[in-house]
Structure formats: structure tokens, C-alpha cells
Image (cartoon, rainbow, N blue to C red; front, top):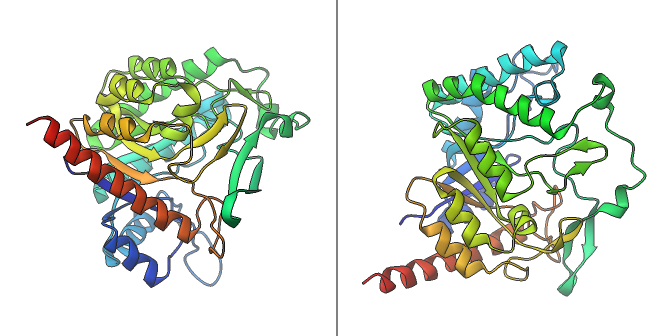
Length: 338
């Protein structure tokens, strides 16, 4: 089957990077919500999830030969996640507007998460590794004395079941809108996938949790982002997890780690704990349209780094590795089926 490689575009990359992506066979992008201001007055006349900012962002990518297929970002959601009444209605309206505008522009996947208060987190971003590279990592001990996020002051108490109830209500509201717009939702795991982060419960941290997510709303528009680095911290059987969830996997983050969910580092591809060959074979069994991208990569020596995990050379190396891996595994699968 065709492997649809994507790249996340965090800023307006230099021209040479676009050319390298095309040479590597990367034809698609999952993007963030545009954050530039409209004019010299620095006045935000429209929100990033409004039609025109999304349209301009999509056109910028497509002028460089990359098709925008997903948005990996969201309007504020903590009022929805935590059930804060005075925030919830406006946030639901904003998500609905994003989904509707994505539909109008032909952007078919929305990647979101249910991490309340604090999103994905690394406690260390420049851990020395071999050959002069730096890797990012997380250690629960680093945040033992960190206070709860400020948003918790807006709620008297929040439990894991509160988050599940609020997620169910959210899906029941937004899935009909997504079906109408033909935009699939793809839930990202908690990162790190631990049961609580600085006093805030987390629920998307096991294979069973994703099975429960699917059961909350049986629409095919209720789907999954299979971030392999997180799932590797949840289970020792990545191929089994892929086969179990395959009907709802719409986006894949292909990366690896060493350690466990409470103390890990993100490795150079091929140097972590995951059996990448059998993982790739499992992904090739998915019999519907899905996309794959590199996720966080080490910063190599003499690399250019704007954000830890998103340097240039680390990503180029990893894209080439993954493309070679899937090409080899695809041939093996095809020959085995003859």
C-alpha cells in the first residue's frame, strides 16, 4: 500500500528544506494553527481557527508543493475538558468553527488531546547523548515540587471519571459537526502517559483507554493518533496495539524512546526499545487512508534547532530512515503474500 508521509510545519521553513522534503518523498503536511498578526498594528482581527488564516496557511504550504491534510493543534479546550461552565460554550463554538472551516478547505484530520492544564511535557531538553547529539526526556522526579496548574483554581475538584464524562459530552456534540464537514478526529495520547500530572488527572494513557474512547462514540469520525513513543510506554506489544485499534488510526507519529513512562528519553530512530520492523508491518495492515510523520528527533551535532525535538538534520535523517524501513518492509510483505 501507499505510505503517506507528512511533516509538521512549525514555521516558514527555508526554501532548501522544502526541496529536501520533496526529494525524500514527503508530499503532505500536518500543520499548526496560524499565529501571525494581520498587519503592522499587531491587531488580531481574526482567530487562527477562522477561515482566512487557515486558507492563507494552506496556500503557503501548497505553494511549496506540500498538501495540508491535518491540523495538529486546537483552540483552548480546558473549559471543555474540566467542565468549567463559563468557558465551555465559547470553546465549543471555537472548535466547531475550526472543524467547519477545515471541511471547507479540504483539511480532513484534526489531531487533538485530552491533557488538561498542561500539554505534552519534557522536563529536560538537552540531555547529552552519543556523538555530540542532544535528546529530550522526562523524569517524574523533576516535577515533584511543581504546583498544580493555575486552571485548577477554576474547579473545586476533578476526577478521572469527570474527564471521561466531559469527553463523552464533547464527542456527542462535535462528532455530528465533524461528519457534516468530513473531518476525522484523531485523539493523541497523554504525553507522558501517566495517571496524573501535577495534580491533574489524565485518562488517555493505556491501550484500554483508547478502546474506551472508541466505545464512547461509534462514529468512524472518532479516531486516534497513534503516537508510537507514547504507546511504547503503555505496552510492550506495539504490533498488537496497532492491530487492535487499526480501524480508527488516522495519523501516526513514528518515534522511539528508552525507559518507562516515569523516566524516559527520546532516542534517535532505531536506537530505542521498539521493534520497528514488526511495528511497520502492523501499520501496513491498516486498510484505510492514514498518514505518518516523524515526531520529536534528537538535535545532531552542528544541527539548527528552533524548538527542541524539531531540528533540521535530525528530522531529515529520521525521515530517510523511516522511508527506507517502510520500503523494505513493504517489499517483504508483498513477497510473503505471493
